[in-house]
Length: 120
Image 1 (cartoon, rainbow, N blue to C red):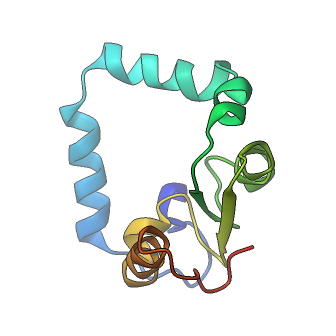
Image 2 (cartoon, rainbow, N blue to C red):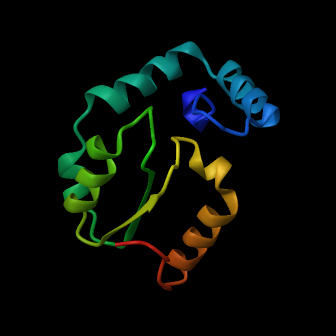
């Protein structure tokens, strides 16, 4: 499962996460899922990002096989007026579920105005 990086050598697979992901997919309606793919792959949000004038934490795994970091986070953070980039080394697309403690601590630090360790 590339979403969590479970297809990488030595990956520790969580059957609970895998099953939860499958069940989430089954709960969605096909129309909404197709619309979501359209939004993520065909809509250009450049102008929207340029208009955001509040601090934004951009969190991304550097081993994301679903949305490559170069195509998303590295571009987005440059467009944001107050973007802060935190890259999770070895992080897959679903790193918020696989690196939960680190991600939650970073989000909490960010919203409380504290430095996010390792962020640019």
